[in-house]
Image (cartoon, rainbow, N blue to C red):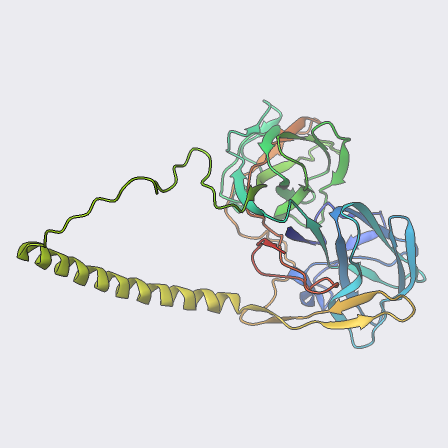
Length: 415
């Protein structure tokens, strides 16, 4: 059965912070030790953050530092208290709390600062796992840009030229309002920043869920919505801009869609397979001298082409390996919090070259397209198709515990 692992950064709107939380800044000399150089913190007693997901396991990551204190985690109404984030040596990108073996379905997690006012609690990232499909299914993914015909746009509420459009995926912009799609999984990406505000998402005939894309700094290609285990058939995703102040917009960049394909040996529908029933023609006559010479020349050319291709492939793989070596995961250390029976992982990220990207006021320089609503609260349904996930990773978990974060490009595996 395919096992999906999603990893989202602290600035993704799927994490709902109360008013006591604020983004960490580069004034913190340890900011570059956080994943992607960003984190969100609270110093208020009872300051809470909430996250809901469909899956079987999750882990909340943050830091444990000398100015951090106690916190509690509530999972589906059950509170786990007595957790402590204080560490004089400082630990970063460490699991503050995780659980495995949950029943596949919707779960809600809240983390609350229980220390006295002025003592810190922060969130760096959240990872969760979900089982999708059956034992013989494989995942087929597709990325659809905002220019895809499956996106439906309503004039004049949507603009095809949002701010910083050059930083969007694929560098294009359209006016979008609805997306109709077939697939088991959909992920929607856009921007967060001061010019963005609250928005609601409605999937098929389900209830509307509200999120907030407001951030102190602007970021592009951020996950705005995610859903899986949708079932086969046609689906529609509707997005509505709900600005709290004049000028707040909703920017749509692209979507990824994932569907299931049975891992059978049968040929896909409409694609002819090999015709094993037809007799094979044979001949006993020998080749002429000219034919033999032609075959020899062709064989020599083919060998030369293979050698050249192998050389170029070796150089390409070497360059790829050097790039991937920039971020290398160090084997995590498992710890058990006394009195809780809950294990956590501590993992670090070794950096080379320029190191981890720190939080700056400049959005990530990715080319791409996007959609932007104007001030009015307009509805926009969004379509998904099969796609490869961005800012998400999928991997097979070993044992009963969650693996450490996977910072490599997203992938899916089956168990």
